[in-house]
Length: 344
Image 1 (cartoon, one colour):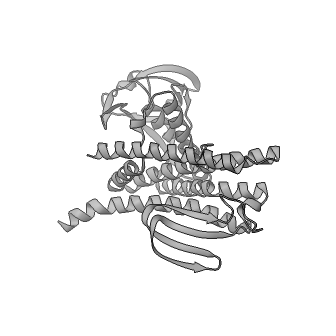
Image 2 (cartoon, one colour):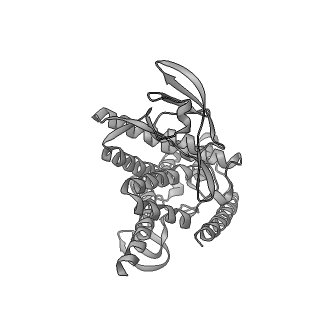
Image 3 (cartoon, rainbow, N blue to C red):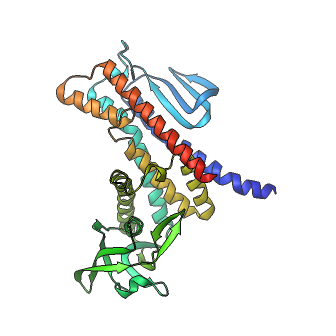
């Protein structure tokens, strides 16, 4: 019985710890950048809510808090004016920009490292060439072994990850594909069987991708291309949400993401790493979107200040950030309720 409980609990613990790692890496990026720019850091917190313990080293208070779904790096003059010459608000625009983007940059670095681990752990490097088909594969009526897939429904394909992404984004079982066959580029329309996952219909991938032997330069190139593919998924997801391909009910917050990661942990280490890479890259890029209360909004204001030599009045900046934060919290509440409903 204890073994069964542990098998249920440990994937969730790993998922929670990974989320906190993403946050620590993000806030750590701000912290290191602030130190490099000689900005005073008042507090660095791991977690949110009531304190478990804290200690002070130099001018910075380090704290651990009970809720391991957050954290922050509090800098002098970050949200208000300060007379301290080492305050964030008194530094040059380019220095503040560096500090603001450092958090997201560290998330992207973490994502790149995870992707490189995935690529290095594989026996072969994936391509976009069809190696073989499943028995009774419907797509084999049009596609052939040796075909190199160049695009799926208008989406350019560069990696094996792009192939699976293109298949999962299709609204039906018919895909317009551009392939290279015998050195010639041609357009084909292929049909696939559908399969259900979590109440939704998706195309069943009925063919296998060809792998090639790893080389040092091949691993570097594949890591870079796979990283770009993961990053592109973030923008494709936003696009699909805007055009109505997905609704708010299809979004996942911390609860849903923990469920996905914990399931991946039970499946395989590679599945876990793929989800982790996508999540940290997602956090890094999403934080750079010019949305109030996110780093991207502060970056937008700093670029505005750098170009026009004029700051947005503190009053208006506070109001915009407050409204943006309220809307984000409301969205998170709706998404979390949806996640819990799905679990129940």
